[in-house]
Amino acid sequence: MIFNIDAQKRNTTKHSELTALRNSGMIPAVLYGKTVESIPIAINKGAFAQCYKKSFNELAFYEINLEGKKYHTILKEKLVHPVSRNILHIDFMVIQDTVAMDFDIPVQFIGEAAGTKEGGFMDIIQRTVKISCKAKDLPEEIKLDVSALHVGESLHVKDLPEGKWLYKDNPDITLVVVHAKKQEEVKTAEPAAEVVAEKPEA
Image 1 (cartoon, one colour):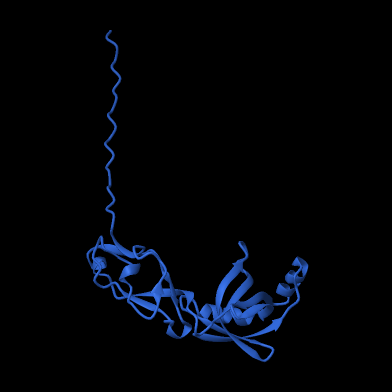
Image 2 (tube, rainbow, N blue to C red):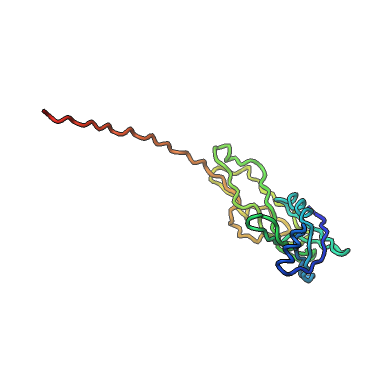
């Protein structure tokens, strides 16, 4: 998925200047890469929000248009306010087609686990994996079929399909597991013994 984003250079560095920039509807950001010097930029908050929502759980590329030049990038880091959840800053990394780079790729779990028909439930432990490859070999997603999973079984990074990429995560990391449903033990409270006071003898 590729999005086009217009950007403008910025000279804001002070906290007050960055706050004013955000209040004007812009997000401070930076472009960087092995062949590109770090360039401070600003992008429209509304335009980016629309793209970001569409790219949820998918790998997205951002074509940054800056002063008549396009930069093919991915969103590498973002700083989010802990309370308002507004995006405060974004790092866009420029992609090099001929050099292997690290990417976080979403895993799409397909099928219905057999264990769910046996009374269990599927628990997804990790939804993304880190891979290393050239941009031209980069998959938009990696699919993992869970239909053969029974209760008590799991799938790991080593079970993912192979391609023109190298998995950077530990092969034994668990991605998904099918648990047995816990049966609640209902304990019936025993009635309290009735205490009868004895009458004193006359």
